[in-house]
Length: 187
Image (cartoon, rainbow, N blue to C red):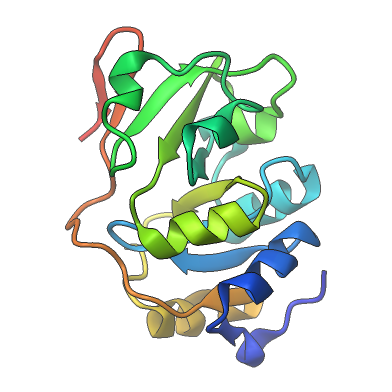
């Protein structure tokens, strides 16, 4: 996929979804900041996203979906305590399907999943086939971008598209809990 640099900003979720389905890496608004995303089934796109973000693959990534059914290819089971918080700004660590790429789950047996209530992100996930990667739009040790303008300025040259939009009302990234122990992994 060719990076388009300055012409990266898009206003139509369907056009951004086409880019994701073709193997692109995109930026889009989520609950607390802008996120970076790609097709979780496309190993080359996931690797490209990790390089752009400068994130070690061992950490793993979040799979964001528009509904629980869309998470079935990635998660073994979706416990009731996770389902009870969705759609909403709650990310859960659940047992990953054995064939899920290490690029997505990192060094873990679990995968981080969320069914978002952010309307635009949910629509984009739906148009992408149900789910997409969601990780904050920043490089290591930088704060996440909180507007599409900021994201285009900082990372636009490395992205295939940025979907113009507004972030949700959260001041911090979504909390992450372990679905089996209930332990808070990220506040």
